[in-house]
Length: 117
Image 1 (tube, rainbow, N blue to C red):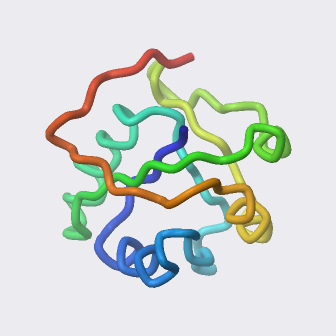
Image 2: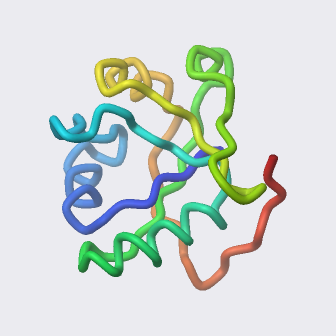
């Protein structure tokens, strides 16, 4: 299970894909960062997206583990629960192909912390 904090625009683009893919990165976004736990995703959404007026949304999705190995190791980028994958923007199409089932929006009122790195 992976998570992605998104703003209103990106949420709309994911919805437009029938909840099956993330949109291409913008030129100033060379890396796509799915995170490994909902606590970290929520922090990003609340601290960064909300402060920039972009909406507070967290998406959750599953991906085939065998395909995700391409983007390992999981990176710990701060506190123990700040863990994420680094997917080069040029590989986002392959990443999207690894997604299994629909991308869903998380109910932020029912978040349970998970252990990190």
